[in-house]
Image 1 (cartoon, helix red, strand yellow):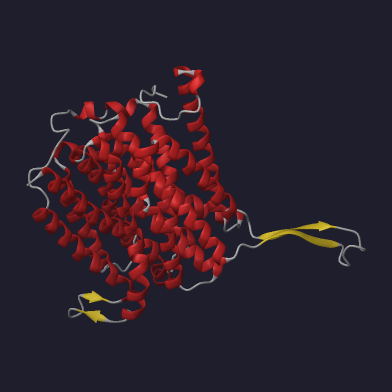
Image 2 (cartoon, one colour):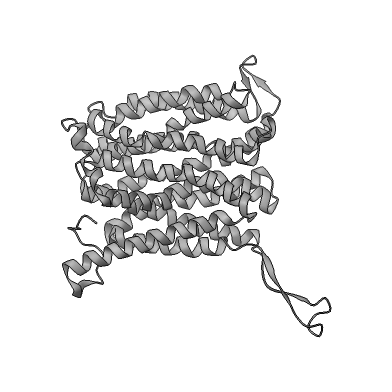
Length: 440
């Protein structure tokens, strides 16, 4: 098989597998709404239910990246597909809260497919094409919208029905049944259609050497950036359907579709982010990404309402006057979430563009750690969103958290960039891309 044809097969099938597993990973963004009603879960339990899969989809990313480098991404991807199919199938038969939370956690294994796919594609593509290839693979994030698109219709159309002699039940339980079958079919397809002779750039590298780059502060800084563009994306993808329901009073199917409008650009623009990073440099793209996230989250975080001030009776008979009213409409809210998704989609590719450039022999381990910490950020953000909303009573407070976090990342990145440029040449402070960056 010619190398060009082989690498295209790797990219195509890894993209499809990642899209499916991302849908499985974040299916509770929709399923948790009817599950909450059936099991009588509190709002805090709702957020924990959506967060648990994200936790398990984070903690193994470092190791799946290393294993993909060492044993081949094809083998690791197939194993993850098979492992994810088991708890997904079990979810269809769950009838108590404890089992529900346990199964939700194990379903999260699907989220670890990202670092395996990143290492797999990095091994097959040359450096000058890695930005686009990794961006296209990462566009599998669009799988987060799959349940949003098909879920509400299937749930409402099949509620109360049974299939296959009672083995499959309609309603929300039919979604994981469909996903379990799809995971098994995808594992078989990758086994048959991808190159049997895989590339393993880390096959002769010891685990200790694989972990060596993790001592560098730069790796942890990239992880923090990825928490903003990916962890927050995962958290918002899970949170927005319920937010639309409670804040704007829309039905589940409409809330799901509106959430998909955020997910699409946050996923499908990832290849564009890779291409822009190849052309203009990843660091310059990160500046624009952070600035756009700060702008959009700054608008969305503003509490709806007005300020009441005391005035003279001549100004108002009640002695009080309402000023600075702020009520964002549903249309404007959707528009700003789309812009937010655009920034995150481009930014995700820009973060990962750094990795093969600075760590060409350690893409698996470094990419795995960055992905793990970014996804862990999504796990922690969900309950934080819930607790802050509960404490403050402000529905828009999650966007305030995102605003603050992104501002910190932008300031840290700018300080590092300025220090690097100052050390190289004070007269070149307008240049953001320096090939030999010090370990900052």
